[in-house]
Length: 172
Image 1 (cartoon, rainbow, N blue to C red):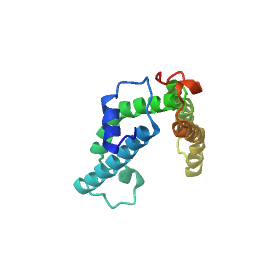
Image 2: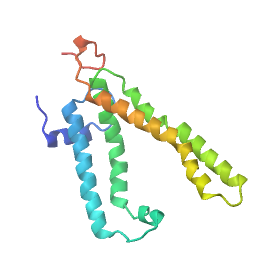
Image 3: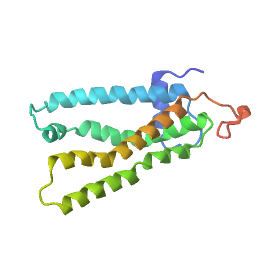
C-alpha cells in the first residue's frame, strides 16, 4: 500500500511516541520533506516579521530572532527521532543507533576546554592563534558528519521482512 504525503505526516504525528515498530521509506522521506517545507515557510515568515539587519558584523547577523523555527524544531524533535528509529528498524537495524548523535559531545567538550585553557593562559590572544583554535573543533565536525552519513545510509536501506532476518518487522 502506497502512503500519501498527508497520510505519512499524520502517521508520524500519531505515532510520535512509538520508537518500536517500523516506518517505510516513503513515510520517513515524506516526513523529512514536510520538515524541510515547514522550515522554508517559517523562515520566510520570520524574514517578513523580522527583516534582516544589514551589517558587516557576523555575530550580529547570526543573532537574528528565529522563534518560529526554534519552536518548530523543538516540537518536531521527538517525532523525528521516533520515525527515524522506526525507519532504521524497518531496514533491520536497532533503533539504538540513534545514540550515535551523542558521540560528537566528547570532542566538542574537549575543544571548548582547550580554547578556554588557551584564553586563560594569555592576556592578549593573537588573532592567528585564535583562528587556529578552530582546529580543536574539526574532530567534532568530522564525527558529526560521519554519524549523519551513517544514519542516512541506514535510512536509505531497503525494507527487510521477518523472513529476511529482520527481528523488528511485524509478522506477516
